[in-house]
Length: 135
Length: 135
DNA sequence: GGCACTGTATTAGTTGGCTAATACAGTTGG
DNA sequence: CCAACTGTATTAGCCAACTAATACAGTGCC
Image 1 (cartoon, rainbow over the protein chains, first blue to last red):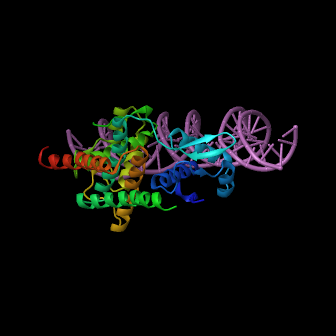
Image 2 (image 1 turned 45 degrees about the horizontal axis):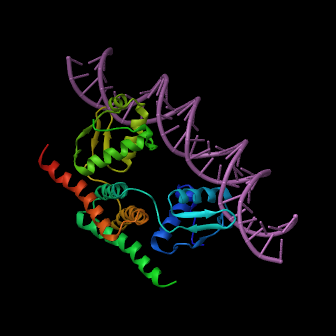
Image 3 (image 1 turned 90 degrees about the horizontal axis):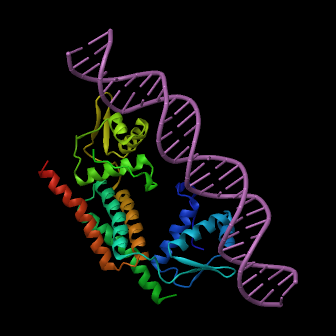
């Protein structure tokens, strides 16, 4: 599996799992209906209690990223999140504003910010394109 | 003062203070050498222990956003952050990538993301412009 | 010098987050 | 039906984060 836990990161384990799976899905490395490792498998692999993995999977389920079937396993779900257009924009806006505030404090000018944004977009979106074909 | 604490936000009080002051500085609502309210003043206003405010100010000082002078007060500092160009970009990149991942999960397409980014940029940067003149 | 203002240090208590141990429950194939 | 796999529930403990009480220390003005 592609998940790496960094004990020194300060971020709780379950959040690291959540974040990495979300990123993998966003990038298309995990696609709809793909199976995730079982709670126990991943727990062993990460040397962590099954409940910790379960906690991560629960969060992901609540966010609409995955779904679970008792006795079967856990899978990447087709669609995400029920939310009004307005809410979505607001949520993304909050994240982006935070990033911009940070960038201002770091002394980036507007052009540099645009470049950074393009790079981020490229990194996530271009991977999607490739994965869709390949695999 | 312009700070609002939301007890239901889940975010610790001191972080809310940090974040709001950082945003104010980034937007130019607070400018270099502007005085911040004293630890005690703000503590009273927010109905919070002085140490909580002090904690926020400490973080801001470490980040290079403000500086303090014993017996005098706390002020917005001129420059920010000592960090290599590379590091800055990396930091901002992390934030932006997180925002993009979120946006993908919320079903925004690339154009909508660009719009959202432009909006965020506009919101922060345009305020700066105005404040620089006005006040 | 003393009062009134600044920020600081020490200590301590509460709370909630995080993780783990362990036992329970659904599904499927031999 | 039993073994082997899924995810789930309960309980508990640890620990760090957060906040507060309180006392200390620097500066400046009357």
